[in-house]
Image (cartoon, rainbow, N blue to C red; front, side):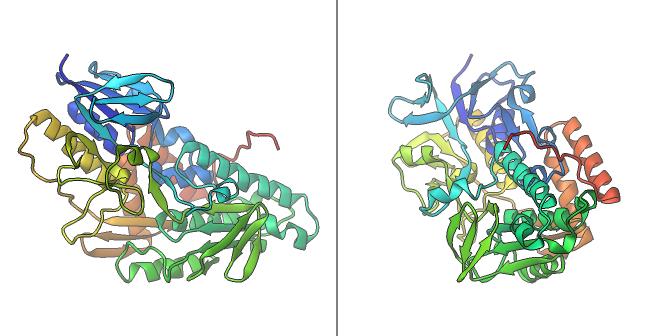
Length: 411
């Protein structure tokens, strides 16, 4: 067996790098805190009971079951020894490497208010999605049992914090749940009793999109009944609600999507990072002084041709992973810098509602939603996952029904 390549993170960057190196002389070891590759762009659909966890996740071992040079380890990396070329895991074990790819992803940034996390979960993992789903379902069940309309109002109020794609997608999906798809199954609550807030500290939503798409997205949300509060930084989050812009919104249903920061392992490298904790990497994605250690995906600060940082999107991570797999295979010191090919950005807002910017061509409405769905299904790993998601979406579109409405935990 050849040199050791250790990949930390089983996301898009890590998986695509490992695929490039599969069936080669390299010994590949993938280390991840979970045992599955997760298609994060569709997490909100699990959170809103449209899809099952198994529809958007696949065991990493299953992905590489036929590649004999790929080993998978369930564990969390706590330290990287750059001098000895070795990583250390939380269980006390360690792994040597000739090449190291760090693609540990990101986590939500509460901007120093970590106590808010308990009451306003983010959406980065399957457990996050399931927690949010059960909060929504439990809230509806509690509202159903309260006769007094004023007293049940908090349980029919939903607050999504952050006007990026995740926040917009969540707010739109909750609006569909609350105002149409699930309400037919409840007898004592009416769709018009629900209130959905989208709170954004900046002056607009979908700031990564060019005009007029943010304006169209904003109008679509308003048409769906979402109250969008702009220029409204959150002041306090409690168990019973959110303080924002001089008012207190009473609700147990709070979802955080206002910002991210890189995995803490990046700070352990002792290198320069940006304000989001992402590693400032060289043109070949390596870190300064260590040409055999690379950072990719959400944990890397990489600029585009205009000098702007690349967004934390799946296509960016996929291209970076393939690039790293290729340069490791070539084993050359003369490396061409990474170049990202931007194929467009898009966000869905609801049923047959989306915005998309594909290489300067801007779309909104049904056609953008159809593009969004087809592209996301294409990126799913495994034929079974693609078929199931396509079937689920077709069913939801025709019937307006959400399929996975189970409450597993006890109150």
